[in-house]
Length: 232
Image 1 (cartoon, rainbow, N blue to C red):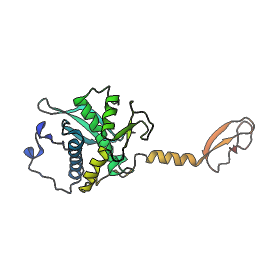
Image 2 (cartoon, rainbow, N blue to C red):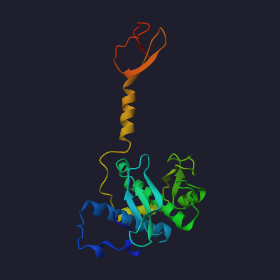
Image 3 (cartoon, rainbow, N blue to C red):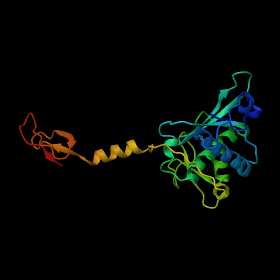
């Protein structure tokens, strides 16, 4: 996977291979777009102060993205780079602006690792929360107003007209697009489970009050009381 502005920490791809991927090659398209977005937000929101890092796609369960400090190192030499991961399974149900807000959410972790005082791995502390608010991404454990701003699992929502909102509009006005997404939504299993739950019923024996759960329309009899179970 390509490394953003990697020339300063790793040998560039062009110096090691004569192959230049065509612009319509899927890997080139998606990672070039994410690299462009990352550079745009670094300039617009962080004053070009972020260290170099690698963007990856990872399907981590129940996570739209994550930051991992010092995840990768050069095969030769001492250079290391951080990882910012995005989960493409969540792209299906989110707008491009919402996807990019996750990128900036993780960039705030990159910023804090370099310029602040991060807490334990994965924890969102008050310093991180204040930087998020400064950029117009309001921390919230629920992703909605009123949620906790700090904790192990904290999302955010976009402040209308805030710095991120304006910077993202500038990028989108340039024709920026995320052209590839996962074919299956990350919430599809949960939706299937919810639908299955709605199609099942609780059956109760009026004699001993025993209960069981099954699909609608079953004709069940209690083995002890020999009574047909009722739907409740």
